[in-house]
Image 1: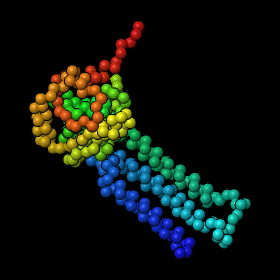
Image 2 (image 1 turned 180 degrees about the vertical axis):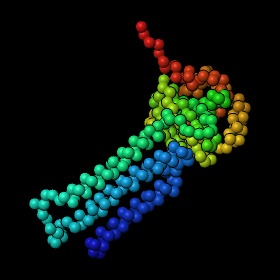
Image 3 (image 1 turned 90 degrees about the horizontal axis):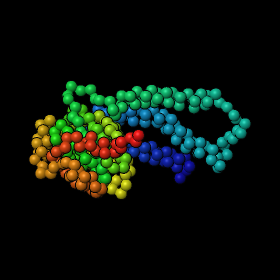
Length: 288
């Protein structure tokens, strides 16, 4: 088999692998690229915009690498080696101008996106937002619905097309709250109240996880996030309120003990300011 045929086959394999990879990440196997809400969609658009612009450089560089390796191989006696060639105005113009244009375009889009996708920025909507307080424990997630007097572990449910105002803290080492198909992750830290505003535009059950390594039980620190209609959400709230488990300070202390691979659990909230109490427990009085 000739060398030209081999080089052609290698190039075809690289192209096929690239196309297969793009197909793989666009058919729903990579959750962060399957947006189900406004924030996630904007982040996905930014990701693809940056990807296509960077491919303007990456693809020619890969093909140029293959061409140069083939053209100037040691067995090719026809290739001219010119050690005195120092400068090409055309080449200099291309490899300075093209990257400069790409960097400029990406910097503008990134700057605008950083402001529009600020996780602390509320989502504009005619629908009243739903407040959900999130506490990262070892190694589980506690969700508190202060307006409905209920709480859950490793499961969160909410209506579609409703802005979700998540308030996030931790009663354990620093962690990170993330629902990939809905958008931004946010860090959860003791004594801190972080915020992230999300929304789901489609019904479904989404994967939620910890995006920050937090010790032995990290791999099992997952939860389900379910979006549904308003009617289904109201029925679900009524069902949770029938739970025999009560969440107060004493039961919370037991719940906060380290445990791994916890199944979903449901509680009737007895202490409405539990979230604030969790934050304040780390606020030591200042010394005089």
